[in-house]
Length: 271
Image (cartoon, rainbow, N blue to C red):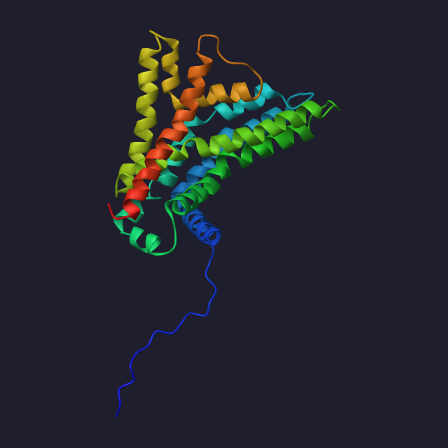
């Protein structure tokens, strides 16, 4: 009886594209977070406390148009909720892959560092948008629908700024949160580390701002609130260097993202 040698057979299926792989990573991460009862409960609590009551109150108050000051103040509220939610959502985004050595599976396929990060950021962004992007849009639409004035030109302008503000609010805390998640294999350490990073920066800002007001720019929440005021055309504090504020705003996004990219790239090549 002869031995039939094992031969490799060519695969006749269609290979998935890069965008498909990114979407799968993002979708899987997003659905995973939706299944977490604790995160979902915290999300609902934040929406109720930070948005639902304010939407009802402002809708019932007389207003001729959608006001820039109202929306800027609303966007500046709830920083603690935003930080805690980002810490909870992003805590295991990369830490779990490090713990389970999933990088071997990810990078054994034709996937690059950019695609991996795009998937993780996309999934986290989709979930955080349920708090930082969609509710402000709903609030703006409700206030436009209940305004007493008939001129909607200025209201549409504020609505457009709200879309930009919501996008920035959703993305702003992601680079730091994901960077810290990439530095540990324990999601509990990543969650605590993320919150403590923002907390320590806030404390440092409060201590040294008595000597120079520009030290307030160490606080990410303060920098973000300045951005909202600038975006809505409300001006900037006169005791703050506008150029330095721009540098700090960009730095809170670019620097941690660059370090995150380097970290993931090194892990992807086995270092």
